[in-house]
Structures are given as C-alpha cells and as structure tokens.
Image 1: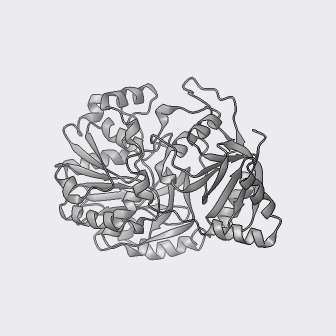
Image 2 (image 1 turned 90 degrees about the horizontal axis):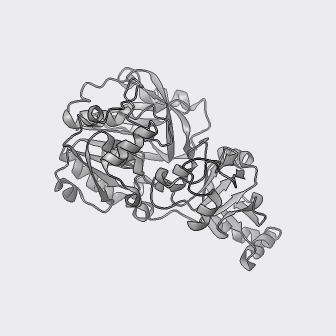
Image 3 (image 1 turned 45 degrees about the vertical axis):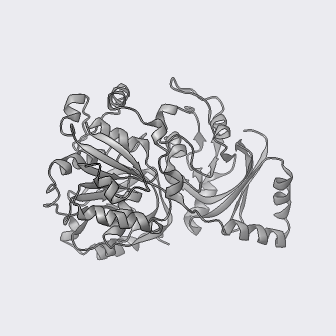
Length: 434
C-alpha cells in the first residue's frame, strides 16, 4: 500500500476510496472487471482493453512481478487499473520489476486497497459504466474530493464522467504488438522451454518443432492487426507459417497483393459496428475466398461483413474461466475471454453455422462459414497464460488453408434444433444480457 489517497467515482455516484497505485493523476474510462487468477501481465498489455479501467477480481496482483517476455504488446493500453492488494516484493526467476513501477513507467493511474468484490457486484448488477480514478494530492484532486460532499458539484462531476466515450479504438492500438515480435525459431525454443508448445485437439502437446510446423511450412498468413495480441502471431509461427502483420488501415486489395494463403483477423478494442471501413474491406476479402480465421473483434467484424448483427453485453466476458460448448461434439472447453460485445445468434446469415456457445448465457462464441472458407471464435485460443484448451483451432486454420473444403461437412446442434429457442431458453436462466 502506497499511502497516497486515491478513489474511484462511478457514473452512478458510488465512491470507492483506497490508495494510489502506479502514476498519480485523474483519468476517466469504462469500468470493467476481469476474473483471471493470473495473467495480469497479459491483461495490462492487451490492446483490447483500450479506453477501460480494469478491475482484477483476484485479490492479490503482482506476486510474480513484471515479465517483459510475456507482454502481448509493447505498451499498456488500458486507462486505469484497480486491485485489492498489490504485491510490493514479487518473487519469480523471470521477474523484471514490480507492478507499481511498471504502472508508473507506463503512466497508468491505479487504485488499490478497495473492496474489489463489492465493486464487481456493482458492475454485475448495474452493468458496465464509466468511472473516474483520482489519485494524488494535487489541487485538482482535492477539489474533486471536496465536490463529493456538494450535491450540485457532484452532479456536474458525474455528468462529465458519463460523457466519456471510447473513440478511434482500433486506429489507436493497431501495430502495438510489433514491438515484441520475434522469429519462429526463437518463439518455438522459448515456448518449448516453458512447455507452451502447440496443444492438439486431443489435449496432448507437440514438442517436436518439425512435426508441429510440417503442415504450415511455406504458407504465408497475413495478420490483419486491429489491436493484435502478440501470442496470435506466436501460435501461427509455432505451426510453421510465415506471418506478415499489416495495420488496420490496409485494404483488401493491398492484402491480396501480398498473395496470402490465409488471413487472420485479430482481436481489438471498441464497438465492432463502428469499424465501417474495415467491414467493407472484409466483404471484398470474402469474395476472394481466401481462408480466414477471426478472433474476438475479428470474429465480430467477419460476422458483420456477412450481414449479422452485434450487441453490447451488460458486463461482458472477461477472464480465463469462461466455459464454451463446441456444438459439433458437445464438449465444453474453458476459455480466456475479453469482450463487451457479442454477435446476435438469431442474426446469422444463411451458410453461417453457430459452432460454439457460452454455456453461462448462450451467447455466440463461434461461427463456421460454408459459402467461403472461414471460421471465427469470440474467445482467445491463443490465451497466454492460459487456458490452452482451444489452441487446436490454429491447427484447424492450417488445415483450412491446405483444404478450403475443410468445414464444408461441419455439423452442429444448430442444424438439428432451433438456435433461437436454445438462446432464449438459456437467457431466461441469467441476467447477463442488458
């Protein structure tokens, strides 16, 4: 605990007072929570958290320090960071610094020492809302603190907090992972050292790089970067593919000029429907019938390009313990997720088959397209620090590249029952959708 006063003011007027963590100052963002018990380094460096104040529900954060090799991008893109307790003396043989120092270096304003469980309950019941973190002893901070006891001043403050909106999200983070990219041989060697090698569909790991890379050798994959996590590229490299990363501003024509064998649509932040230009370019890409794999935002953008619709969730899915059901087999996998929007199940166009659903609320977690070689998932099969259950989907992408007919015979529950009825029946059991 640092001793300097800091507090969070939510848009609904609730105040959580604690102590300063990281940089001091004042920041407004969208307050969200994530339930991961570890992987806070990946959370801090995930570009998908752009514009958000992130609360960790796990009480102790920072116990293994900051490890640059685990970064998902070259900088911290979130707006603010909230933890119950921050470890001041981390212990890990790979540790390169402590959490507080890293947040100061990245100029991220944080808050610790509050009841994060109580805050999480507020966001679960009321839904995601904006918030302001005020940290330090500046005159401005003191003025805001005093305004909390003045109803007219507090009303004005809350109006300011509510007016915040995340804008230009994708444009702000595209390319942020390029600073931590490494070559295929380095990626596999380091992955093998820590047993983070490719995981096959049967759950076993492939430790032999020659076998793991055999099917992907000679294949060029364009990673269309909307705020890509570095581990997406690493997983493709582990499978032997050449990966060319291009920014979000690239057009379908420019991508096709690279003669790719496949295109990866990356994760990223913000409202997917706002990316009108990118959606238009994806439509052109689809017509070229190049194999496509979309993850998270990429999944949503691909769905929008085919005529589906998206919706904002009440408080989203963020954490490393989200169960998803693979409708082709009935098997449930545990996945890592970070998103506030979802594709509407009942809006899928003809030829698009629901492949995964979230078992908590029935929302769409995956789609297979039969009219062109493409598939997508809402969750993160590249999850680092885990779980690794669904990383076999990268093998499926390589198989799709080698055989564009790979998913033509895909059968799912949605072809045997009405997916809308399934969705509605599940929704009745939860208050998740706002």
